[in-house]
Length: 221
Ligand SMILES: Nc1ncnc2c1ncn2[C@@H]1O[C@H](COP(=O)(O)OP(=O)(O)O)[C@@H](O)[C@H]1O
Ligand SMILES: [Mg+2]
Image 1: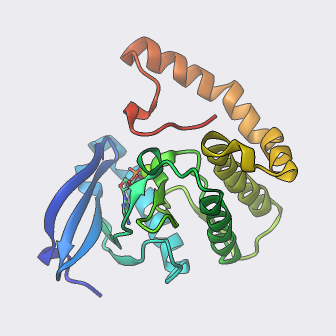
Image 2: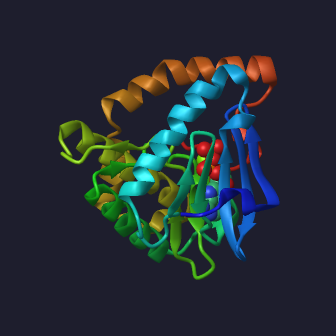
């Protein structure tokens, strides 16, 4: 266990209505703190549920190379270890090896009974200094030790989202099987795209004049 109060802020990584993500230093090591207390009051309950989900998933994924370790979760602050590297939109992984290793990493996550569920977002993928993939942000993850039919569908969606990034950065390395996975999204993803997402984009453009994840890396659809 760590002593979270001893952590010193280094840099703010992200702040939105769901709270703040900060890079901090603790006992000479870099750690990441998610602060639910900084969320808008009316979203705090939801933000706490999401952080609790992340804690549950990270507990099951302990010590997998390329993933953060859970250091502490007290209902307000969630601390995880820092994974060095750049988010995908900056690291721009063009080497097919990155995707081979990322698929292996996902296979280990799935074998532990966890699906990530938020892999369309580039900032959730990291490119470590040696070019090896890292994965963060398990707020939407599901833990299903039984790995039933619903789990397998979600696991396939995780893989399909990774392949979309591969299609962006090194399309020539996609295999025929991978192209086939890309061409067949799950029914609920198609439904989502046709309904809620279309409406959300329209509202976001009209009201705020943007739809692009605030320029912080694309979300591929
Ligand atoms: N353990 C970590 N190591 C390195 N960078 C991280 C780590 N956790 C988060 N980050 C960086 O901070 C960003 C925001 O964290 P994330 O958990 O994705 O928050 P959110 O759920 O608000 O998207 C990530 O996209 C990533 O670039
Ligand atoms: Mg994220």
